[in-house]
Amino acid sequence: MNRPQRPIFGFLWPRPDPHAPLDAAAVQQRLVRVAPRGPVRILTLIIATLLSVFLTSAAVMTALSAPMSGAALLASAVAATALYISLRGWVLGTYVNDHGIVLDTLVRRVRIPWNEVSEVHRAREPVPLLGMPLRTSGLRISIETTRGERFGTHVYTSSPDLVGRPDAFDMATDRLENWFRRA
Image (cartoon, rainbow, N blue to C red):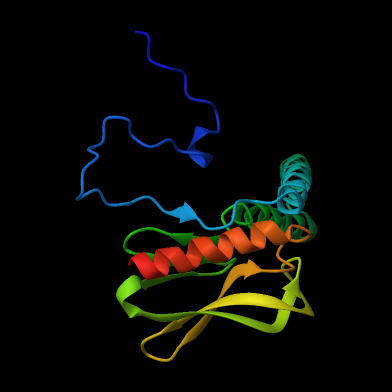
């Protein structure tokens, strides 16, 4: 009867099971975000989500109230796509657990087991400006696999999670390198 209430959006910040065993064989199953969402990303995502929800609801109401037209269907499709992209933006990032690293982008999820990671690089290269296609010079952490593939992570100096916070970039870099060394 006295179970603690879960917040409405509690699935965004899951809590570890307090009754889980804590011993030498404990394994981190849940993915942990390497760099927490920064203020620029959170503000952008809140505004984009609200705008896309309003746009989607207006487009759907217009499509339902007026006779079926191509413009109403097109507006509904554009609005639904905007809503999908804004909601997917909440998931973007680099995640780790004891099994490997996961890179979540808008269109795909790349899973790399730790036994396939050969090196974690820190290099100066052109990086996206706030996650957009515009490029600027900066530092980026990349993952190189044993097959010679190289994947850029979301840990870079002009990331919307890390921009203007050099200490957050250093902490995310250290966190990723420590997971690699420990694996």
